[in-house]
Image 1 (cartoon, rainbow, N blue to C red):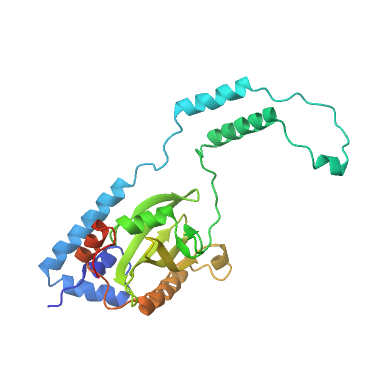
Image 2: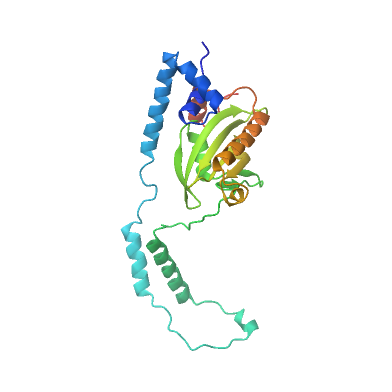
Length: 271
């Protein structure tokens, strides 16, 4: 009897298979006690990972920081208002705020951020196909810190919650493979609020960067202007990414054991 790969069974558990593949897996599982046991392991692992990331990811602002900001506001009085003056345009270019006004503005900005509960980062709602990415010194698109951390350390089928650009993000590696040029590559998905998400493919280069070969947004403003069928958009994006994988991949996707060895070895296993 054919033994299905861990990746295929994990995709089945995560509800990512099409109708034909799902029916094939269900028919196989119905006749295989071994596959049933493996499925139960994947289900239990998914539940444990889900419970792990239920805790809030953003901790409260420490009280001593709040006190320090408030004390600074009390100590620094805002400059007294002066009568309005008419200033020549050229002269205005030479004016600069005083040191005391800078201090006041910084304190006021800190209080505003604390009151809004956004901590020490500025929230950005900008989501496009560069979301979560960065640029290398050579100008290539690479995975940003949070995405790279998940690709470095998380097994396919697992998930991690991150705050990227001020937005809660759900990152999941989908599969790992070796490219025709000998690089290790990973297909991944990033889930955002509502129906917005991204799918991508990144390959690890010699500088330990995850070079992004493709990343596609679905469910965003640009996609919404074309259609409101988010499920259809998701399938179209998945097909587009699978085309990129087919172009890059040499052989089959790596199994769970091989992938775990690479993660433990920092992606430096012999090829």
